[in-house]
Image (cartoon, rainbow, N blue to C red; front, side, top):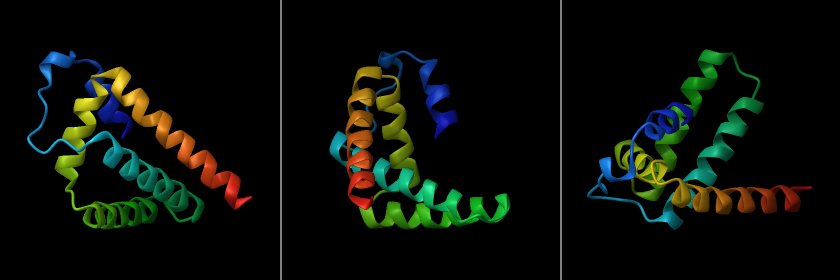
Length: 107
C-alpha cells in the first residue's frame, strides 16, 4: 500500500478521475481495517518472508471477496482518495480510531 500512496502523491486531484466503481469512504474504512489487521497478523505469525507474503496475498483475496470488490476496484479507489489528501486523511482517522478501540477491548 505504501508504494501506491507514494505514486499517487505525485499526481494532482484533477488528474485522477473518479473510477466507475468508486468505493465509498465507509467501505474503504472497513477494507483498510481488515487489511491492516491481516497485515499485522501475518507479520506476527513469524513465518519466513516469502511464506508471509504468499499468505498475505491469499488472505487479502478473501477479504476482497467478502466485501464484493476486486483488487483493481480497491486500488483505483485508494488512488482516487490518495490524491485527495483530506479525504484519505478522514478515512484513515476512522481506521485508526477503530483499530485503537479494538486494541483497547483486546487488552
